[in-house]
Length: 364
Image (cartoon, rainbow, N blue to C red; front, side, top):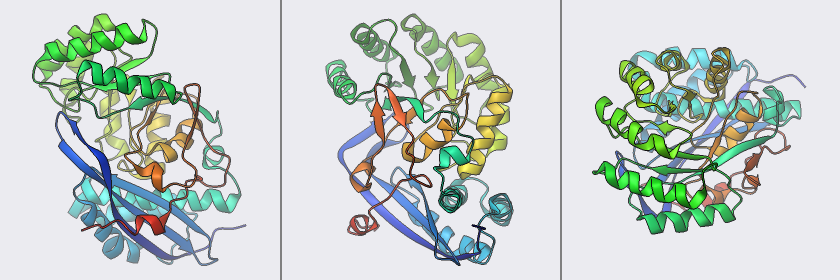
């Protein structure tokens, strides 16, 4: 079956309330996550779905960009020429919005187009993109900065019971000694060989990050994530060279070109987020770029989509499993077996959102 022209683009904007307030070192308290859904339908009636999300702000801007700016750019275009559509939208929006909501909107569109393309081919997305291995190592990522050591261990027990065999914890408290005490408790609880990551959410200056990395090194974390803001490439080079532990970063970069500089700075684990880096098109370019540097690639957010992307490439490391309450609105939540997430064999990305249930949630 050949691809058909895009007939329409439909947009939904929803706020998913969180069961409890979540806090990290830089974003503060988070009470709900916004999700913006883009559905592309072609002239033959086939459709694909993509989405992006925020931690509670700017969802309206993203939805508006999809409706007002992107829709007239893409309706009538050949849905199968995804690279051409990506380039057209990127440069049309570039001057007034390189990065930010514009790229989150483009990401949702791009995911929808790849979902549509894989459905028309009758293939799961991971096979269409390369088909390496559908079983992807994954870790449980929580927003747990303010938990006490005992609360953190209790949360970890729950994650182990769910089948996780790798865990990420937040760091970046006011006192470094508190981070170290929690990390020591986790390492003692999990054992010496258990994969354990730490995530600072850009909390520190370069010198603070180096000091923290050195303090964490005896506990052998797989990586220290986002120790400083991602734009500080020279700072990343210092932290990577002087800190003594591997660095992961990139979830807040907004195009694949920026990842080149991050890799050159010495980051070991490039970490794109498919919902904000430019979609599947850009994510896969980052993954292949990392492979050219003999580096593993990891991910942030949107695990139901990203499991396909990491399943497609041989240099995948860990998938972050982090649903933000979205699982309650998905027909088939991602399956985890003994520490590995399983990319489904349903055509497309196989993620079916309950839009009727989401429609009961206000976006005001």
